[in-house]
Image 1: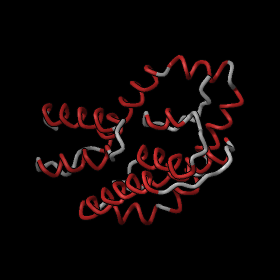
Image 2: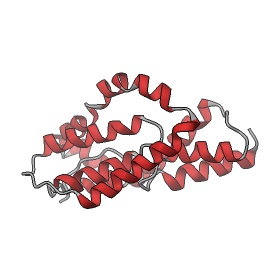
Image 3: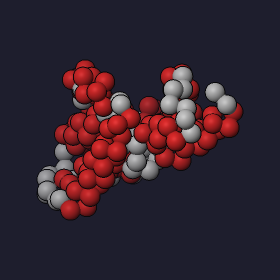
Image 4: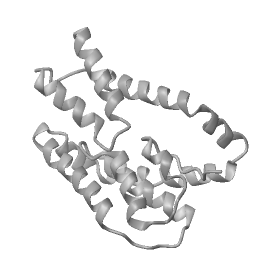
Length: 182
């Protein structure tokens, strides 16, 4: 892989990961536009690992506090991860079908629809952190489909249910944290 392409794809990954757009699909679109539709899977993983390392570095004090003093909230974090396990297997046939570049536009439009509905639909529910974390995990699972944005899904759900969940800020930063603000 040419160095310039690697730098461009790394920049696209780093810039789009924290916005409510699918970073993976944007990387795929750039590859297609430049005629490099096949890049090693390890490169894509390295891009995502770089994003994770930057995020862990940025949020290290929150992570440390969560592990040391706020263990009850750690359980909420795992509740948000729980739906990913069955959804990974249930969505596997759809993912293999949807990874074709022919469907990227459709799933990017679905992401736009999720964001649009997040601004228009409101349900008023009582705040229940475990339920809220589980529902955010379900929405996050939709991002297993290429083109569906994890951050768009997790931003929209709290907007829909209006639970006044103070941990939503951390979902907006692109990762699955549900931590009560102090």
